[in-house]
Structures are given as C-alpha cells and as structure tokens.
Length: 310
Ligand SMILES: [Zn+2]
Image (tube, rainbow, N blue to C red; front, side, top):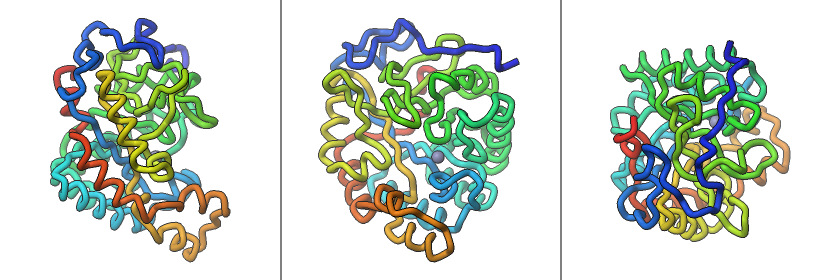
C-alpha cells in the first residue's frame, strides 16, 4: 500500500539560496533577521561506529557507551540540551545508557533499529524497523519519540515514500533530508529551512547547509565539522541564522573516540586506509571544537524548537 504513495516537499517553499519566504503556518521559522530570536539544535546520532560506517551487519560494541558518556559530559559542562537520535540496536544492548541520556534532560528520538539505508529496503521493511524502534524506546524511557532520522540521511528523491509512513506512525518531525548534492545522499533542491511535507503532517528539519555560489555546502556536522576548521562552521551557522534559519547540526559520539578505529582494527575489523583517514583524521580536535561551538551559539532540543508546531 505504501508503495503507491508519493510524497514531496512543498513546492511553495523557496529554492535553496533564495530569500526565505513565509510558508503557511511556518512563518516564525522563515522570518529574515530573526536570528537572535531562536536557538540552533545540536543533534547526536547515538550509534556505534562499525554498524554506522562499515555496515548494518556489524555488532554493537561497548565503545558506544564510553563515547556517549563523554558527549554527555561536554553537554553538561555547557548546560546544553541536545536531541539524540538513538539507534535502538544500541538501546537494546545498553538500555541504561539511553535512560541516562534521557534523565539528563536530552530529547530521545529515533534513528530506527537496524541502520539499513532506506534505499536498500522496502517501505514495509522500513515500517517494521521503525515500529520496533518506537517500542524499544517507549519501554526504556516511557514515551514515544516525536522525531526520526533516517540512517545515512537516506531520505532522498527515491525514498520520499517514507514521510507518510512516519506520520502514520505518530512522528511529528523528521530530520533526514540533507539539502545538498552528494554521491550517497541529499536532495539538492529541498528547502534549507524547516518545512512541512506536502502530503502529510510531518515537519522536516533539514540539516544545516550554507548557500554559496548557487550551491548548498555541508559545513556543520559529522565529518565536515571534523575536517574543516572550526571557524568555518561557526561562520556558516552565523550566516544561516542571519537569514532567519535555525542551524540543525549533527555529530556522532564516536567522533570523540580518538583511539576508536585503532581499537576496532585490533579487535579484528578490516578498515581500509581511505576510511582510516577520512573517519579518523582530527578526531583529537573534535572535543575542543565542540566546546567552542557550544560556547558560540544558543542551543536547544528539536522538540523545544518546534514546540509551537507539534
Ligand atoms: Zn546513523
């Protein structure tokens, strides 16, 4: 049944790089010059490195616990609340960790269960995976997640069927669309600001992209944040805010794990040199960058940011 559905983003939304216009019911988010009126959101994909990067068939390792606790420590230091998109394969094994994140006042949202890319599964398999994650999170923290993030930002042109399924499952928002051009993910023509999907009530909170020379550039999350100078991300966030758009940033606990890749290799994982470079470079700088980022802007959870809309 879900195969027959088509979903798309609101065509009334401005194209990337255009001056932001008011969308029906969404004018607060699109008001130019309102930068100081709202906060940005730091989102954290709570997952373990092998399953997230090397493939969904990998087992969850204990490193995710230590890495997440380190994240919590940094957030506590700055008194910042974040939105954690939890992979429930991790939650199933380390339930106390998820309870600790929740008890610290952070938002618990869903990153699905098994980390299969939407481009590799059917709508039915997707629905089963997400349902499972809702059940696990509900059991652990006593409430349903309001938000969802697709593994590998895999809501792309061909997987837009996912929006109505998420709305039917009770989600209020998704933060799965990267409005950039990339080999594996992204919808380059998607709006950069928060908007509603056209044929369901789901709100989309796209990942921060900086419009420059007619292109949207990823600058404020994951590997981009780790590999580019920290000042680039802070400048981009400032520019995004100056157009009336909150910056939705993302990171993973494993990015703070300086010895992680070496330890995974010692434990028997086969990690090629290219991956070692792109995934491991500057991990030792990440924590310092995170501190400077959290000092430079105001942050809140996605639930708080959207409170008037959901
Ligand atoms: Zn992930």
